[in-house]
Image (cartoon, rainbow, N blue to C red; front, side, top):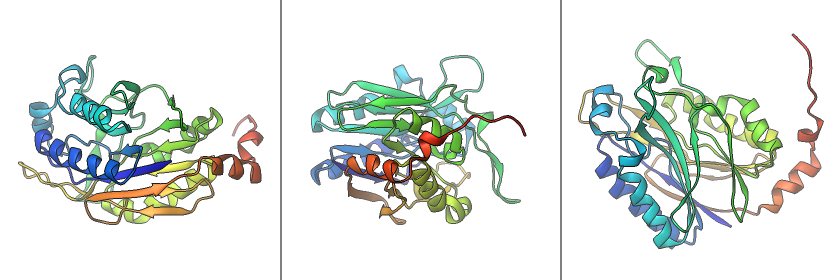
Length: 276
């Protein structure tokens, strides 16, 4: 199968982001990709809660979702919308960060709400409190498709190996990690973590990313690492999207999952333990 990783530099205007996203999805499909993936917060990258409250909508009213469902249907592809920032349906923090797997019929095959909230202080000038704006999910999601079983994660989930292990032991052959990784942590940790998760799980890891300096109508500038990666079950980097907006095409042989797991069958050696 052929996958296409879409690398974006989304701003805080969902309508403008949609135009760019549709164009790159079509470009990937035009190069033969039958599974296309977009990054985290495809519809809106913003550091301003006020701006998010202004432009975001609940899932049922969001404009990006049905437009990309139409693209999947028209192009006859499987499409992972890495995530959409949406207004929450239940009380609590105002937003959810939700990934969607769309089938070639345009229907939603799976939804996943990001489990782990990015609450960190990277430096004196760069900090994030994702839990102040977003409600965390409460379940892992494994999607079944004709070409592979797909485990769905989002960005900061990458640091929680037990989630990836659970998905792999449930049968995931591909694990998706759509992201908007901050530059300092991306430069230090992005590739090693993705390779480690692929090796531990014996699975393909596909990580479409946001990149660069994101357009903004406020004074809250965001910068992300880029470098969308495709990693093999043996931990090899198959493709790197670099720093620029665009697409990265990679061919995957799903049989490599079983071969890697047979060589090092660590998923079958898991043992419960007491302590510490």
